[in-house]
Image (cartoon, rainbow, N blue to C red; front, side, top):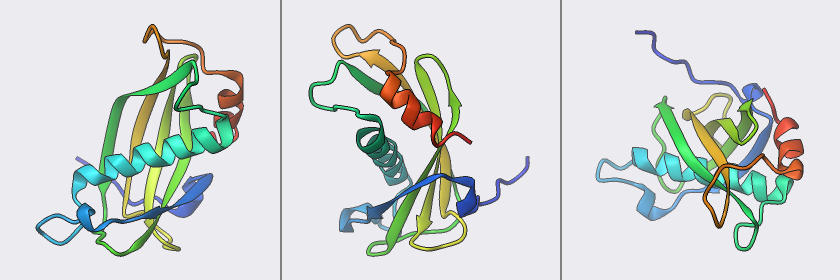
Length: 144
């Protein structure tokens, strides 16, 4: 088994600040592994809202997470400042797989990196739909 290496900043195309919270730390004094998935969700959805026009409250299309994974490289603890990094690894008709990195603010390599897959569905029927044009354009802009 080959151990993954921490990706560098240049592997990503979009960055956003992340604020750690007191409750993110676990009993061992660092951010608990499950919190990274919350960071991933926040990074991807923030990009979709800001760049792709995702309307989380009343839009017809929503993204559902169908797969995720994470590799951890260095511990993080509250109150460290972080950055979430995003790229698109694969864009299909109704789905997108993101590559996401979590960096200490300004650090050259990620503390954690992973994948996160959304399938876009109709809010009412919960059936897959094509990625809306505005979202597709935004996602193509950060494709790996």
